[in-house]
Image (cartoon, rainbow, N blue to C red):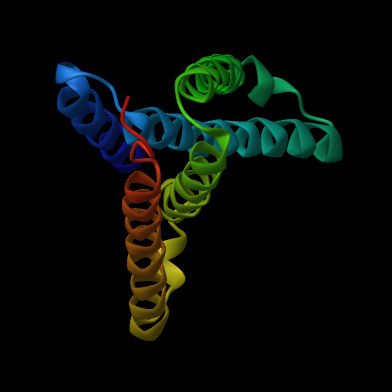
Length: 158
């Protein structure tokens, strides 16, 4: 539940902020968060299948939550590709791909921490270092986007 609240909150903010017009950051951030979700659902699905095969008990695969995990893997993967391709069609790949990759990594890792409750095993030092790394990554993305905007200004006036 915590993971779903987190991800819907982030995506809701991105969509609400983009109402006036989706920019490059909206497409890449939304595609990255969807990519993080895809990885979480894919890992969940693969763990269910692995456990069923190793234990020889396939009852877990008939559970509606297991079926939902597989369906959500497919839905989020297709939606992620659509949003990413739309962003690539509208903006330069040299800026879209690095920003997308950053959001993908940040949300896959953060999502894993929340969904699989890995944060419970983290020490204060681990949490502090993770937070610092995440902030550095996001600041780096902001700087990359700002620098790219400056370099894309028109070079001549007709």
